[in-house]
Image (tube, rainbow, N blue to C red; front, side):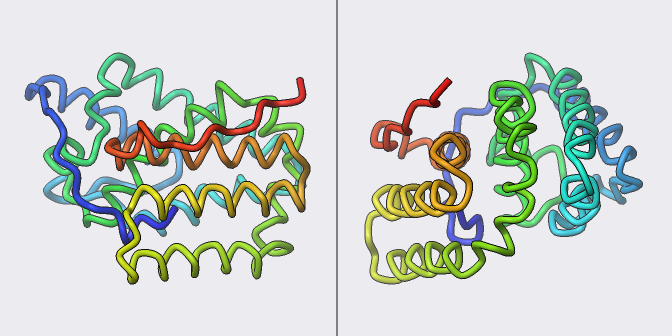
Amino acid sequence: MKTSIFLTVALLTVGTGAQYAAVMYCYSQFFDTYNLTVGPSYTLPPFADFAQARGKDELGYNNLNVAKVCLIQNALSNCIGTYSSLVNPTDFPKMFNVTQSDNYAYVEDFFIGIYECQTAYNITINNFYCLASIGKNGFNSIAKCEAQLSTDIINKVPICDAENTFVKCMGNVYTTYCGADVGAYMCNIENIALTHVLPQCVPTLINCPAYST
């Protein structure tokens, strides 16, 4: 999914000052673990900087590094708890000073992290080596998926249709390089991102394949 082409979505907001403060505290603690800080006016680190800091663990030498990432991610989601509904494209920039593209990136990352580190943790850990290498080994194939998405947007294909084509494409790439379960895993991850940043697409999300076990 390409956050740079997401459309702005109006969501119902119900956050109070105290609820926002609780979420903001959780994120401050989260960034501390990566030696990053929330700046003046609650400015978040650029998402690319955060991804690079976390990526040192995600792309480490073994799956113990991913286990560490998940411990940190789970601490964030546990801290936020019932306020997770406030992690959405409308409320998030009310709490933090963040660019539009990073707003979407942080929102989808939070919910993808829950899936990777809780719901599908065994898939994440058991397929670590392939997942860590597909960015390089499948670079050209992934680039084709992204290029098709960009073309569809330029050609004014309905956004949900364009995103579904992208989800299918990415699922096929991951299936080719890492097997059917990882293809299903990627399909679910992309659908989770869509659910939280383009909720109008939820009724038409594609059905992801079932896991083998």
